[in-house]
Length: 426
Image (tube, rainbow, N blue to C red; front, side, top):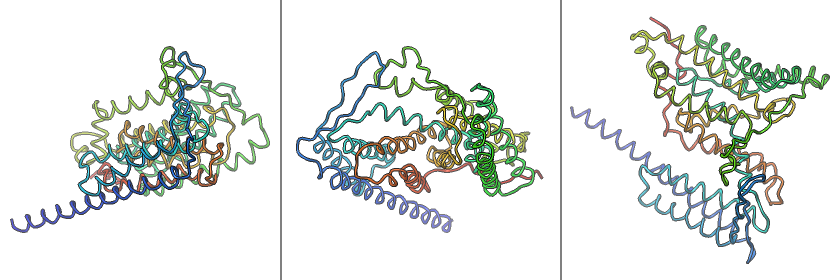
């Protein structure tokens, strides 16, 4: 009894030390954010400089006035917010509200950056947020693919390859037929076939799931690069896919600010809205979802109550591949551009980071995808403005955010207990 009590006390002490360490790290990070805002953003501002953030995006029925703020004063206020949060975090912490405070400081820092960028000029805030949604689309599709697979206990590192193969197939089929719908269907099937290959390797032949996923990624990168050079470059007609036009949703698209951001997109964005809700409801409010989560948490227990573990895993991995293949079509059909070698640029891996950041929850993954999409949109928008940051650093921004988010969440989220573990029926 005494040994159990001592062990429990030791575990509690270790947990407290980890919590205090995270508290100090967050507090120092908030203070550093405040220092950056003051030193690099606020101090260089000339007196009387204003920042203009455009809030309307034509065509729209309601013209919102621009948000004009004094640059230096606004930056000092935002720095004060971050410094206050850092001081409180270091002294007593925010307890269970740490995530809310982290989000507040992150918003303050991003807004400070935008005020700094728009100092003495104007920048479309609504356009930036609209681009954020667009840039987040393939990331969230990748995250949803990972959730479907990993909730059933199979790690899917091959999301990058599924997105890339979907983009290639959609471009070729869309170009040959002139039909975007056939291109989408072909991309979806391609992703499903690659997922079937991953499932066979991982479930039947018990190949290490991470190794199997990387093999598929290497296969897709090599094959699409070869075909792009040997086939598409010599036959340009096979790489001129049609583009899906934006479909403004009546009434909703005319809502000030939110309308252009959320309801003036093409079919991929609206399909993503529906898919996030369907997967969330399916996983947490249906018998299908209960079976999937049981297989991902404790496959042996699921097997004892009559659930076919391997069948559930096969089904979910293939569903994840279908989602990733459809998301890959966004790169070509959604943007109306031809296929380029490795054009997904690591969005599948960023989707995995969004899945982890979102706690293997579709709604959380969608929110995380928007964060990564915002980083991508900022580098795309600011690269055309005259700001004293090398373009190479701006291109690094989405990946730097990915590293910070994943590194900062180690120990705070829990994967499904049987994730990555092969199951052998006894």
